[in-house]
Amino acid sequence: MSRLPMAQRPRSLWPDLMELLDTFPAWPSLRTSLGSNLIRIEDDLRDGTYELRAELPGIDPEKDVDVSVRDGVLTIKAERSEKKDTNGRSEFSYGSFVRSVTLPMGADEDNIKASYDKGILTVTVPVNQSAAEASEKHIAIEAAK
Image (cartoon, rainbow, N blue to C red; front, side, top):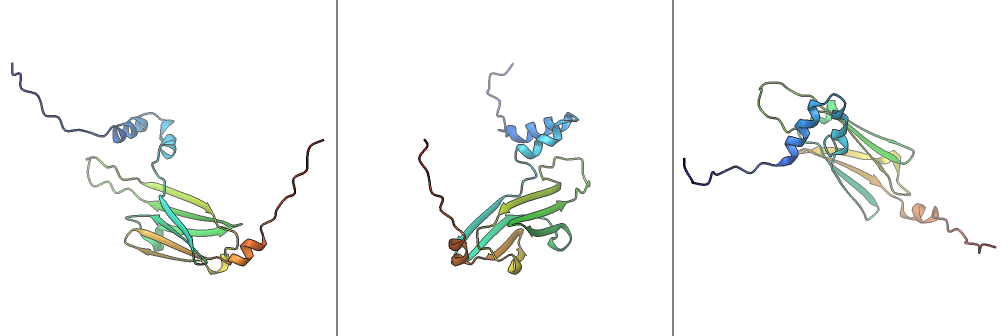
């Protein structure tokens, strides 16, 4: 018997946990709460423009992405279909993806623009800063009796 230490390749626990969830019938719904099928975003409000960038790699934006706005909430829906070419491991996320964000006050919902480049969806929304400031209301605080 050899006393040489065995070299083991370190593995991430996260993919194995996700595979475990797939083995239980009711547990795949927990994948969303654990970070899978989540659209990751960045957003910024600068110079009268709100810009949201969403990671959507490997998706055809013309067929598989829908951007909508309603009551001050911007919603991005996307779908990535699984292609079964191999029996190997896949850590890609397939299925439906949805992410909603509340737009800043004064957002011009009629002039929203979206573009897609190299796996990043960019949504720009003009914001009227004076309208946002005018809509702010201060509430007087009364002393309790």
